[in-house]
Length: 207
Image (cartoon, rainbow, N blue to C red; front, top):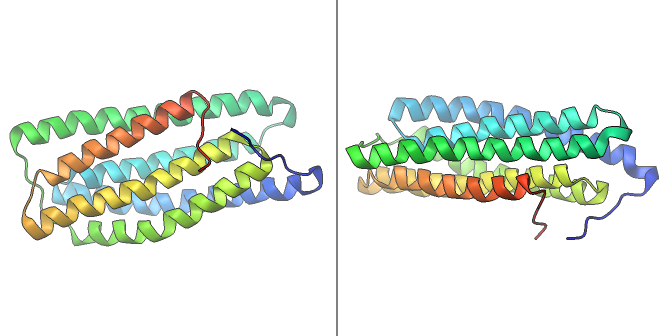
């Protein structure tokens, strides 16, 4: 994989842009997490709760980026490796929770209520997340930062999760297919494991 290196003259500007994008991620996902977890708990929707937990991981990941850029340049590589490990661990933790709860819900035939709030949130996230992910990826490539690029992949993952969530909530609301919710949760967990492994190994996809 080839990461573009920034010209030293624009390096400071790119670093500031990375920080601004990280703060934008913190703000958006903090609100998203509160709405999703609250609505998910009210409706008994595992997929919606899992989506909200992913949003909290997005916040943690963005904080890692802010922490990284707050350090001295001489320690950037060490901080970047540790940051990638933390991002990877956050994915694994999310996947573990969702898998266990999905199995329980499927075994007990736990049927969630429909959630119009969740459907609206998922649809809005499908618009916002690709824009934010694209901006992060471009900045990460130009800056030569594996961490920022990996964080863009986590934001892009949120787009996939939004589509899965929207499908699961939609099927439950329209057709009464209760099992679509925990199945959507399992799909979210599978994506989280893949991205967690890539972040842990220091790999990012730039396609």
